[in-house]
Length: 247
Image (cartoon, rainbow, N blue to C red; front, side, top):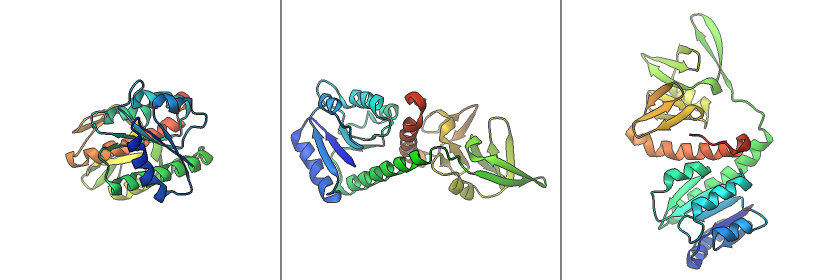
């Protein structure tokens, strides 16, 4: 595994390196002082800590160029400004850290990035596998529903209602059980809703707009939603043919 640091300030690069080496002493660690130097490097990193505010080519532009070369790179932006966090979606960033860095948070995010790198490699091996299906009982009939076909689910009057593109299927069950089986492609932004990231078109702090549908967002869940959607977008960037991104 190759971990890289790209920052125009030498002191900052050494600071990050000092945090990384004790955690991953056997992994390759490289440093770059500019986006140009990183882009010209022969071997690209598996995990990249990337500053945004750099002279000549900034971090966002560098990341866009890197995505054209590598769909699998795990990119962690590190910036003193929070205003670029939503732009990170466009390049499939894994995380966005705000300076100054907390040691515990830094180690936690880096560990998750390593886990993502390993998961990406494993998923590449099993790329052809499909999401599981649900077998539910409705009106005395047993119905099989592919989880990937669910746009979103909602709870109403002790029933779970599955909304797909062409039908609404309701059954007696618990949303918590569905959430567990649905996996990382889904998020529960509100106690009454479970949404499929694949069908999201836009969102704000109160509402998630899906294909032909919409779901409520609980204010307390907004930041967790943004982080989860960022991780999901990273995976989609890896597997999308031709590097397509989500809107």
